[in-house]
Image 1 (cartoon, rainbow, N blue to C red):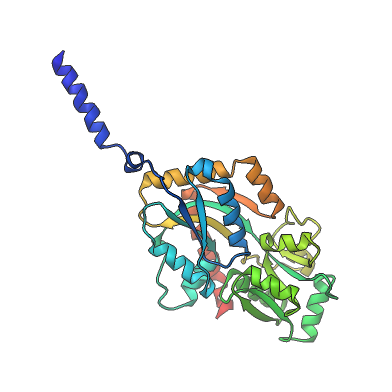
Image 2 (cartoon, rainbow, N blue to C red; image 1 turned 180 degrees about the vertical axis):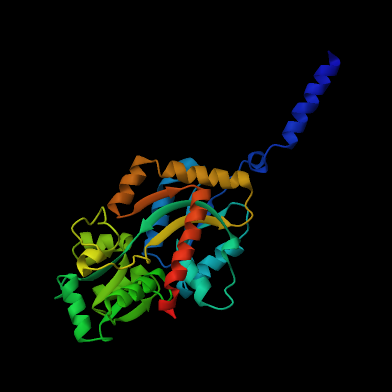
Length: 321
């Protein structure tokens, strides 16, 4: 009997030694930082801050947003890639923007191998909007003006070399238009430029534009989506308004990632927290009101989505060169 008791004690002790590190440490035991590679007020910032408001019960600690804007997202993505892989730093990867940086610039200090996919959160199409006082009432009004004044119509947008810039190029290519795309550090500043009449139109992420639309300050003319947006059902899609197919390659796919090498049990904890978040009815309703189209995918599926988005970006990259 003593032999069996001793054997049982040995087994229990051995099991304790193999307990996952995260469980032994009580991960997480301090706030998790969410890096946003763009300025406050834009689409990435909007969804990140909404998540931090609701995720604490599932994560177990607070999540804090830190904006690291600049160079079209490169500064923030680099910071995320180089962060400690202990599970206490995550960030939003925005596709196709991250691939445009990788494909169009030299000596980019990160690659997709530097990131660990956690969960996909959102699909956010681009829309073309004008000031509420603009004479442009329809997309046709806008394109007619552009055709008559080629290269002279100023359109603001997140850029340069961003998903918004890519959508502008795809629109110009498909419809034989020539706009003067003016780059700003995010959708927030691009919208501010529109409100201040610095530009005649703006290409904005739907989530960042919706508050301005609902307050009656800007008017959406078209949404770059295959189907009407749930929050803007009366706004025509680009193909409907243009009468021909226009690729919606600029749609932002936003998901959470961490630096590569985070322990598997911590990745699993983060993944589960975001899954529970997207099942929270209050969060879902708040996202809907902000025009955020939720599209949850686990780490494996999000990784596959990123690879597919990269391939799509390669098909249109020539338009950016």
